[in-house]
Image 1 (cartoon, rainbow, N blue to C red):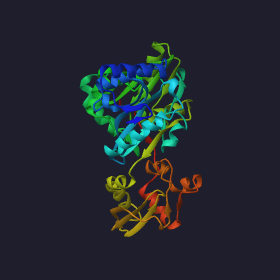
Image 2: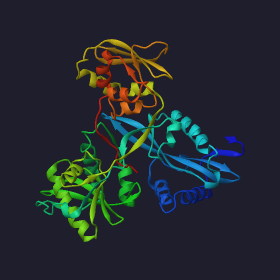
Image 3: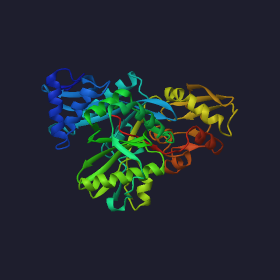
Image 4: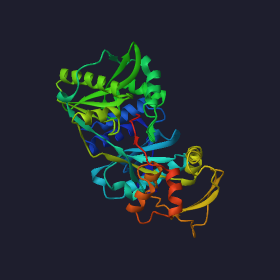
Length: 406
């Protein structure tokens, strides 16, 4: 595409990759984002040169973003998810709406490739103009001085994580998240890539396995940075295991000269709760920004989950046809015998008393807010009293956490 001398295209040649890396170094000085790009290109399945969208002017790359394929799960239903990452504009070409040009092209690709949601970590406020809304907590941190942690390992053994541990760890990873409403998923290829490189997202890590009576019961990953010891991943599920891991981390941190432990596992994680009980301090997290592109198709994909929620609620056996007005579009949802049987686009001139702001719908979808809370925050979320129980049944509030999966 050519707009006033600006060309939108993918990376193609080795020279293109080098130009992209140069833009990363210029836009994110000292953050080693260029190294992350190289790791993704070399190790992430489904991520390649065509994953980048760039704006060129005068033969050079002046703006770019990339598409990182992910899988999130909501209530056990996998969502085809794409993360917009490495968003950058050359300082000499800012305030020329180049990211708006890229986002228009990005949205078209997302729709064409059938992604359910697009997500971004992103700087504050900027991405609201592109239809994104803050949802699941991001960058949760809980800090505790090492001297407040237990020392006893309780007879358990902790050893380094090995390649052969991956199949067991994959099962433990999923099991440890079964109480979460929304969580991330890792393929075998992702596990192998992280183990091969020793990197999870932007942090270099060392992995460990907790064994009881010679049996691996959990894994965890730690990272040393800025004089602190970071706990960045864990499958620990019970308090006893949590105390053992904290005792090990106390010893590890002391041996490495760390003064404090920082948990990045989310404020509801069992290890984090143990840290809080021992005087840890939790931050105010940032948030994943999320955009839904095709609500009708998403409703269809979620029908097994919605039906399960209906069948275990007072609405089991319900038969009704409900119009949900989302302002830009309207959906007619047909429920027969407690099951969603049809979701159709319909005339938005009338509604049965359900009006949902489409920009904040991700908060309801991902369980960040219930319908009463959304109605208090947003006057354009309007649900008649006789439908509020049904909406909360279909979209309950719950704890969620997204673990880095690249």
